[in-house]
Image 1 (spheres, one colour):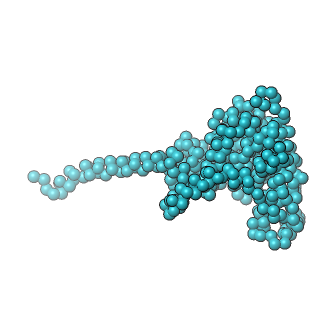
Image 2 (cartoon, helix red, strand yellow):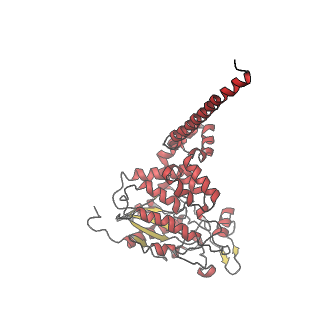
Length: 380
C-alpha cells in the first residue's frame, strides 16, 4: 500500500501532462479565434471608417468598385493629403479624356502604404494605364522624423498584410522595437485592432449603421467635396533667420504646418529617406515589371512659399535614379511651380479650393503630356 506522499509523486507526471495538454489546446484556440476574426474579412468588414485602417479599406473598396464601370484608360494616383485634385472639376471641364484620373491616395500615407494598396487594388497589374506617385521633391532631404520608423503604416495596411509579409514588412522598420511590434501585429492582428474593438463593443449598433452609411455614400461625398476658401495671403518668411510673418488671424494649424514643413532648420542628412524610397518605390516598380502600365513620378507644389534650394544640402535623388528604369516616367519637375503662392494655399502644406481647381487642370494636362496620345489599340 502506497503512502499518501508516494501517491502524489506517482500522480504528478499525469497532472503535468494534463496541464501541458490544456495549455496547448488553449493556445490553439487563441490562434484559431485570431485567424477566424482578424485574418478573414469578418472583423475588418466592420472597422471604424474614420480610423486609419478603416479609411484605407474604404478607399480600396471604392476604387475596386469603380473598376467595374470605368474604361480602360484609367490613371490611378497615389499620395498623401497634399495630393488634392477634383475629379468633378475634370469632368465638368471635359478634361477626363483621353485619360481618366482617379485617386487611391490617403492622408498621412507614404510609399510603404501605397505598395500594399496597389498590390490588392491591381492584382493583375493590367488594370491601369499608369500609376502616378506624388512626391514633395525629386531630391532626398531627410527630416526630423524618419519614414522607415513610421509605425502608423502598420495600422493603415494591417488588413492587407499576409503571414508571408511578416519578416519583410517588419525588417523595413529601422528600430528593433518597432520591428517586433510590426511582426507581432501581423501574426496577432487583434493586437493592432485593440482600440477599434473597444470602440465597437461600446456602441456596436452605431458601428454597423455607420459602416453601412459610409460604404454607401463615401464615393459621392469624396466626389462632391469642396475644400475651404481660406488662404495664406500675407505670409512672409525671412529665410536668413527663419522668421515668419503670418497672415492676420492665422490659426494653430496654419502656424504649425508652416513651421514644421517650411520654416525649419535643415536636419542632419542620414540617407534614410533615400533608402526608404528606393525600397518601397522600387517595390512598386517591380510590381509592374513586364506590364504595360507606366509608373509616373510627379513633384507637387512645394508650398505657399517654397524653401530655397540652397537651404539644405541634398545628397541624392533616388527619384531620378528610379526614373531610369523601364516603364518609369518623370513629370516636369517645374510643372506646378506657378501654384506656389500663399493665396491658393489653406495652410503651410495644402492647397485651398482655388488651388485645387487650378492644380486639377494642370495635373490632367501634365499626365496627358507625359503619357502621350493613345494609339488605336489602347483607345479601345
